[in-house]
Length: 300
Image (cartoon, rainbow, N blue to C red; front, side):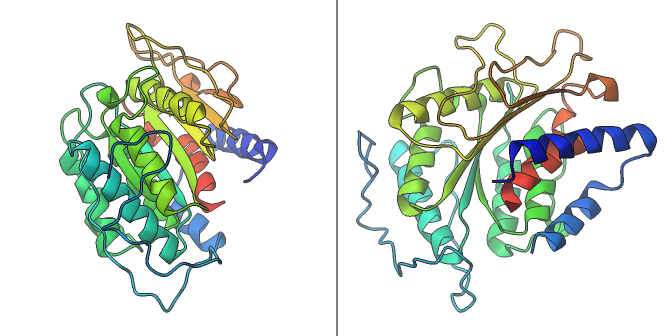
């Protein structure tokens, strides 16, 4: 992983540059970055899914050009536990075959999850892993902040270096083992044992991200990185803190939006205050500091 020092230096450079000149278009920046970076209910053990055989095993995690892209249906957030387990396991197996070694579990904020928006992201990825803007989801109403402002531009820039599943924030509670995001993350890892897990969440989805990180720590599952975006806990059980299993934890927040300020994450490698940019709670996932941080993690 890019060292924490380099990551923080990058954030500082971006903040300095923003005070001197207007940011360039997000997608152009990502394309340049990408070019430069050339079932069962789960118990204590990972799932064993007999009707989803691993297929050809490969030791080398680099992409294999002679294996054609095999499309796999992404599970829906409302699917049963068994469907989530089998579906995420199948994604892990396919991703391993293709040399995709990172999986992002993302959480939308309170009342912001939009399955249609998430499916646009999945469909574009499955149709053409080298994603482009013509398949981009549209932003409508209060739903899909993470997909529209963060995940779509970042995954376009990453050019199929990672896979993703999006969940609503109520899908996991404090200390809730075997919640659907927990099942999905561990099932994907069972299908892709050399893979790396990344968790991200916005607003109360940041709280959900923290709860998933904590549960995975209880299972002994390591995390490549966690990126929380204006995370909030007001009215919820469970604090915000860096869990021992997280190699890197970056937290971005603002204090501009009345009644919706972001919170600090105790022990985070960086708590980055973006209040000086004038960014609101809803649009902070679209800040270049946030996008570039997640993109760096995916391209690492």
